[in-house]
Amino acid sequence: MAIAQPDIPAPALEMRGVGKSFGNVKALSNVDITAGVAEIHAIVGDNGAGKSTTLKIMCGIFRPDQGQLRLGGKSVEIRDASAAHHLGISVVHQDLALVECLDIATNMALGAIPRRGRFRLDRRRMETEAAKVLDDLKIRVGSVRTQIGLLSGGERQIVAIARAVRMDLPIMLLDEPTAALGVRETAHVGEILGELRQQGKAVICISHDMDFVFRNSDSITVMRLGRSVATRRTKDTSRDEIIGLITGAIQGDTASSDPTFA
Amino acid sequence: MASEQAEHQSSTASQGVLSELMLRQETTLLAVIVAVGIVATLRNPAFLNPANLTDIARAAVIYFVMGCGASLLMIGGGLDFSVGAVFTLGGIICAWLLVWGAPWPLAVLAGVAAGAAVGYVNSVIIERLHVPPIIATLGTFFIVGGLCVQFTGGEDIVPLPETFQALGQGAVLGVPYIVLYAIALGLLFWFLLEQTPFGVETRALGGNRKAAIANGLKVNRLDTILYVTAGATAGLAGVIYAARVGSGQVAAGGPSVTLSVVTAVLIGGISLLGGLGTITGVAVGALLLSAIDNALIVASVPPQYNSIIIGAILICAVAVDHMRRERLYKRRR
Image (cartoon, rainbow over all chains, first blue to last red; front, side, top):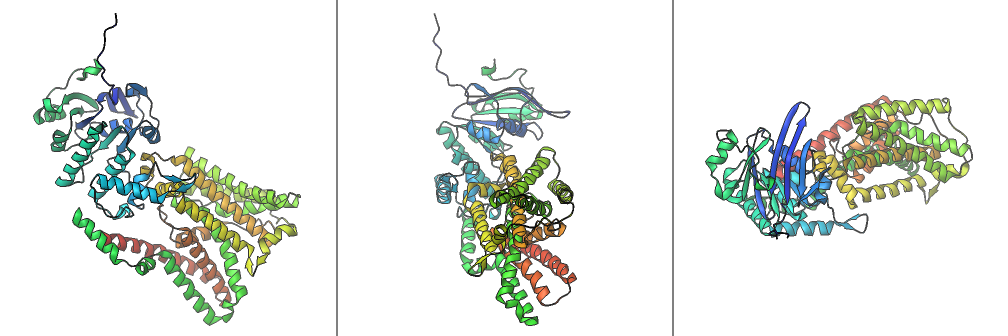
């Protein structure tokens, strides 16, 4: 007789045993990360721990040498950034990936430019959509026709986040989303991520900002020297433990700490 | 953030339409064209003769037609030094087919297709062999130039049918057909650049290639389209030139044509760094180059001054444009 299983949704994104080398340099080895639906999952680690490489594998910029990437429980191969979009992943890159000479509305539409008919750009819709997203997120950066090159670093960062939100995809990856932001703007980004969680989206966020991580995340994966050394529920851990895992003062888990990998 | 936003809005509001117009490269260039015209007319009133002005427009057509494709490519972050030789190739292929009795539409298409094919080869060399664009297109410039001489034996291809020559030499209400072709092509390229997702993606590619890749744009496909387009317009310009002069001339193109086109495009405000520029800027840049050529002849200035003046204007145009952008960004920040 079959035993009834509780209806647990598959994790939104899983990395299992992922490795990546660049020539003789081993950047990642045996990286395991699981981000659930309606969860903010932080990835922390020292410089060179492999966080950005991990994120670039998640969004198709790099391809892993070993291991598996699963979305919603299904194994996938992400060939490039365009394929990642199609698979439901939006990204806020550390360098923001904005084009200075284009305006806010155009930057927010890149990769999914609205059309009128087959060939024509629908500029009005592009501007209306951008203004609506900024308005919904309570972001004030002036006219959507303002060139990105005229914005401050913080404004650019918030526009990059708004662009990812506009795509309305189930998984959002962010690489240091608060690096150029002040205290108030950082709190605002935390609110935006909270709203995304409420909408059922999986948010994976690389950050050095421990205040931000502990205030906003549900779980934390610590990376050290190209490996994922531990994953903890945020409410069950402490800053001292996470910092100890980052520096190596505390020994990481020998196997993946995530029960789904058992 | 709110105070910064208010600052932006007030500074933006203070910029009137007139001051925005003054900030445009095209406005400065038009002023330079007027100045060139005044000086040339003072030395020889024949400069303002309608026939002479038509000659200026006719010569500008060649720079502009080639400049349309070349500027789109440069806005997309590419560079094509092979256009001078492709220009020759387009004219020769078209003329050769006409001499062999091919109907003119087929010959015209073949001239354009030959240019497009060289553009495709350029894109393959750049993307697959990872040769920098300046080297790749310089290489094809020499190869295509050599092939043209080999193919023709160094002889011009004549005679071309009257019907074909009429396409390059005729006029309607005093306006040469070739000027009308250039206007039509300019409108097409303006539409492509300003009104289509392709134009936006081209600017994104040239403005920040990494960002274009990160946003999922098909950058290799875009590169290929841009190089093919630059080759096709160079081939088309060669066809137009063959119709205008009534022969397929092996010495029609060459390094001077390549440099003139790149100069017209840069003077017109297309950024070598990609992302920025307009088709109207290229039109005014081509007109300025042609006006200077003509003014120096009309004013009986020795030809060596031509290159000195063009070189000085090129440096000034790029430097002034850089300073203008710097000032604009600083003020608004």
